[in-house]
Image (cartoon, rainbow, N blue to C red; front, top):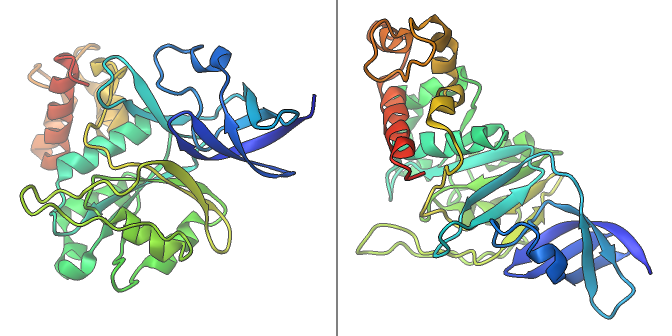
Length: 304
């Protein structure tokens, strides 16, 4: 048996492309691995390191090596099933549009919680900055760099900010996350000119973008580093996150929480809550606290 270690660089349904020292191979996942974890649509994701059996006509994935982290979401139309978007990620770039469609702090915060919950550092990218240049002075966005989450401004249309993103991602494996219509595909075409991703037009009725990515793929960045493109997330899933642990994914709230009177404080309406005191004193941004409340309520309701 000829075995080789490789990296999964493309995934679509049960089909994969794996990059090994011998080259890139179409590969399949044997049933013995496919159904090992019944909670996942596919137990293999882009970014996974695997062991290949190259002795047959088509390469077979024989083993999935231990992961550093992963990003997963609820599988669309599959109740109780989760889909891994990417594995072994160094940084998640959350891409939102400055306008058309306008960004929402609540959406951004939910993506950031998703990244934190999966132990992936995050960077915020405001695309389409050419449509709203004044957003650079946004007080709401100014909060994030102070919390350890850099904000970069870019325009896939003009190319502004693209080189800075390349430098930020150099030598790293990054995943682009964001809602449809944020311009992820256009941005990737700027970052990786040979990517040739199809750009979707916004729906006139909904203002939401059409999904242009039907697979997950890892692309090589010029100058080093890798970029994983994932489908736009209409359902931003936080299943598995305990409401009591949510505060740990808001750094400014996590810092204040130990000062609360009650160890099991939910930071919603309890007396002598240090988080609410921080909100009143101005050390906690109102939009961040509102995001915390919304997510907490959805988790308590079992909505994920």
